[in-house]
Image 1 (spheres, helix red, strand yellow):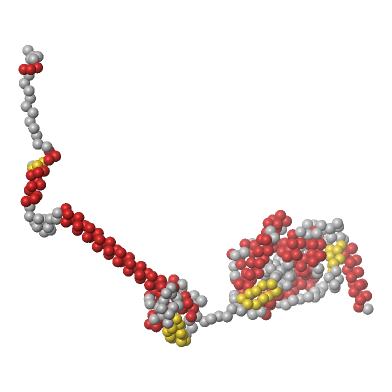
Image 2 (cartoon, helix red, strand yellow; image 1 turned 120 degrees about the horizontal axis):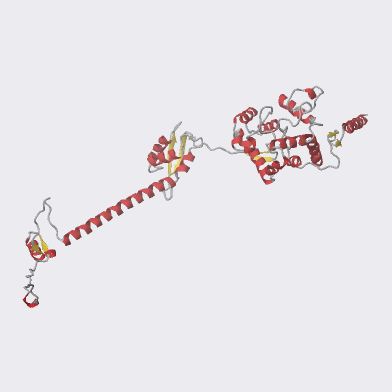
Length: 421
């Protein structure tokens, strides 16, 4: 039977086990600590190193850290002092000032110059001078053509001043040139040449080979098949101050820059899109206005005649302007031609507006602002004029029909004949 009396139930014997956390290798912590105290403090480890106490280890670590910090500070200070010394050598912040004599031989290189200056005491670090010269491409730059000779220089000079001390001093001279309104490219080149700004052949070669379209987008799409000069019409007539002795592109780009500036400020680029004509066509019209009209108050009316003919090509396929033939004859002759003959009216040339239909291949001069403005905005006359002619005084006579035009010509001839009697 099952014993239901709890008092008679035998109790289990509970064995007390040692604390596992206090055992180290079979010893209690107290026993292990006592054993450590009995060890010889000078006892060596496997690597023949003395065992250090916790205090000794901490002191050693502090000393090492201090040595490391001191070493870093020492190196940093040394580098800073060196950097300041190098910067002072390059820029001459607080260099001692005294004069030294140096002799520069012919065709000296920057490396040789560094050694010469270093030996003279003008610089402290020739290697740094060489590096500086290499960074500035001194040996290949035309700005640093060292001239041989004896020089007295100051040790307080910076590197740039030192190098420029041995460069030939060029005196920059300027010249002021006024280009008249309506001047052609040939006439402008002659003015450049007369004022010491390169010569004609160099200008002509430049206009053939220099990529003006890369800098001026309004020159990119021009058809050069039948025209004489790409830049005709785009060299803005004005008064300019130039440096002499420069390359032709320097002078031509100055005039092109002014053209671009005027067109941007006047919003001619945007206005051209509304006319249905290209910039080149409008400049061609302006150049004809410039050459056909003697007085500015006729510019807009002459412009209207040209536009009226262009808008009615079936009736008036040809412009029939003497100025376009004069331009072609002048370009072919290499000089200005003023008179034309009946044979010239029949010449086979794209600029002969008596034979060719529509506008010539390009402008026939470099027009003024007023003629350009009138090319964009012709006069709105009561009658549509298709003809004009002028007398020797520049007075313009306009006509709607050929009959009226011939009558105007006869009247001018009679008036001139009467004056000559």
